[in-house]
Image 1: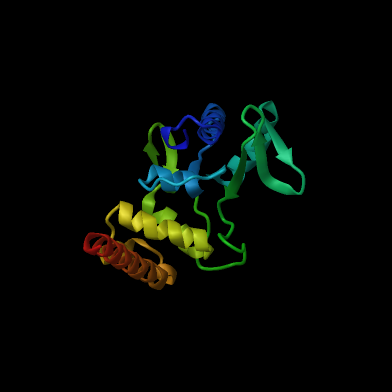
Image 2: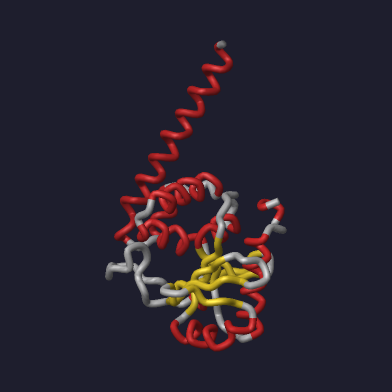
Length: 191
């Protein structure tokens, strides 16, 4: 049901996006749902939206209509209709640990593309933010995005220099995984 686009996470994503569109708040879907939009299918239990600081302030004013706030998590909300949580990432803040670094969350107006009627962060920015976050799941997502989108070294100039070596490491990891799969296939054929 998840990959058919009809589960609660997809419903919540569309409900929030519709509310943002109605309020004329620029957004870009990021995180696991953006990974899905960019051709690698993986599950996730929540949705992440990138907004400008002004967009987040505007969203907070309209959020009471259908979304609950989460105590002690000022940028996390729950869609009342589905029970699915979603996080707001704010332009100008830093991915990962939140500590200052060379990469910040950009203004969604400058980095979205429309996929299936939704504003989704573009592939170079998604990969760059995932590498800057420096979490295992994010590196795994990058490896899978490289494979799904048939990326290679020619993609590197689209990324901030601070993540070039991490992108190369993900390319190398994809190669190691491909070699492992070949060995496994050969072992099955030989048996």
